[in-house]
Length: 239
Image 1: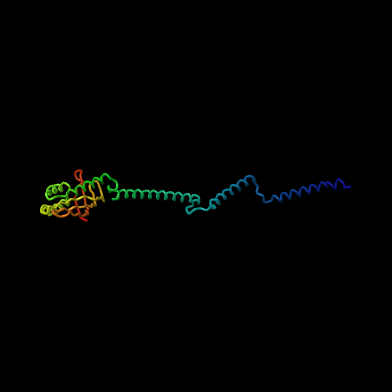
Image 2: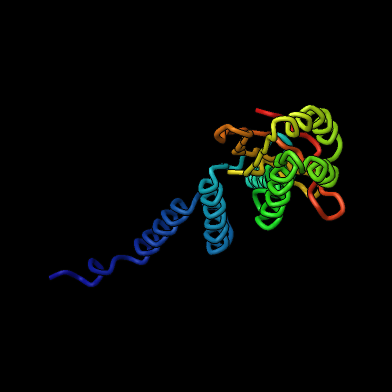
């Protein structure tokens, strides 16, 4: 049978055991930093979060050449790139406008023969009628032909015609020569509001007394000017 003193222990032994426990507790707590454990945990969390943000940006807290944070540097670079792109687009737009104006101002687009069918038809009609009149005559119709030439021709063309017709007039009377000219085809190569260049194909029929009629083809390069509401031929070149 165990006595009460053996189970519980003496008062001195119980006191000694309690002191040992206290000493062990103090030893375990040695080196601990006093303070609020909750505050330390929050501070560490914020530091970890900031570090994580830097790692996500790839900056790791580094600074740029001018002391700015890399994120700020990157924003500046992006802003500068946007400005350069805007300038490039504006320059390209200005270039397109210049090219468009040059295209509108080219001689090809100024040629009314490509855009104004009514004006083209009119100049072809006037020139064809003039050529058919001044290059058609009979042995007793030369005077009327010369008067027609003054109405339909001008400038260099009238001078050329006068020099040529002076020779033809005598032959027409002596040989009873008749010349009839038909415009087979006429094309306008260039047309403006006051001037035109044409390529004209003619068929000319010569008839002399006692001989069979002869047909010859001719090709003329004609320059005409709009005078008094009518197209007058000012230059003729045989081709």
